[in-house]
Length: 402
Image (cartoon, rainbow, N blue to C red; front, side, top):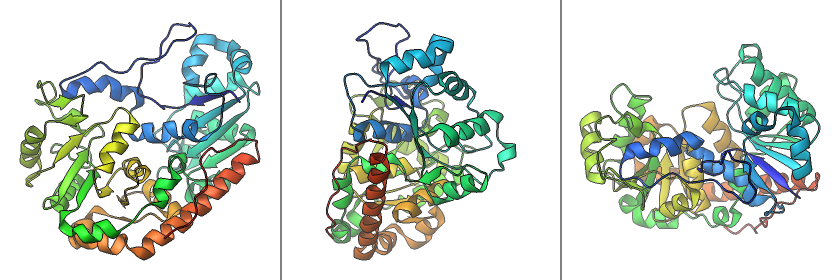
């Protein structure tokens, strides 16, 4: 099967020329943080790399004749011919979605592309999610139309959890089905290898990978970042950037502020800067920024646990076989953690209870067992739904071993 995957599966510049056997370019090597702005714009949220690549990793297809692309960009190139062009080259479109069901989003380009494609190529939707508690009537017309297209025409309209499913059903989109985020199904053996034993032995010496909002005064979610810094100040921790460092004026252009070869920013420079900005003694061991997922997983492998405010940062750790505790402040993270029985709490709770106590209470034999049991059910359900439409999920279903 030839599949076109719509979504940010890579952080590469896609070529605008129409020549066979061409591929996109990565960002140029950089020695400072500002050099990452262009590659960040390619995918925006770094978590998009984790969930965007997932469908292509798990679905069987003719890999030499399948591809990543953006339907809006293809529509601009081919116009009304897009349906004919795609039907000659692909058997299926896979649309990897995220939290677009929101009053803050618009999907004009995607809507126009889907309308132009019509019924020329069948498609499925994976991972769609709700943000907040919006009223359908308050959403941009393009979002309402895309939801209607998904509901009427998608072979599979998969959403990430039961809250999104219930909201869609209530609003008349009855074909939506909760199947979770595909990123959880890429490396099932890693999920099933999760253990709390190393953490128990290490206690305060555990190496923590974290993510959140360590930013400057007045920055987005600044207070949450300060609380995260306070909670982790006595732990060995490494921080994974999203885009908050773009607010670090004065540091962005400093030569040596980022080492592109190791995906790490200057630790001493940032510890000093963030200690001053937050009023907390920040002493991170590493500051990471990732433009591809394998490096992310390898870095996670060097840590014992993830505790952070970014959901897909935690998924990267789970994919590497490291347990995660998710800091939850909205329904997006709550829905996804509940769907897989992943442990979650607020940053306030992390600060008041202490990291070691949180690890002991949220990651123990019982919680790990429940997580694995829930996960296997979700994986089997996902594979069964795919198989009904002749889509084979490549990953095996592991045995439950506690």
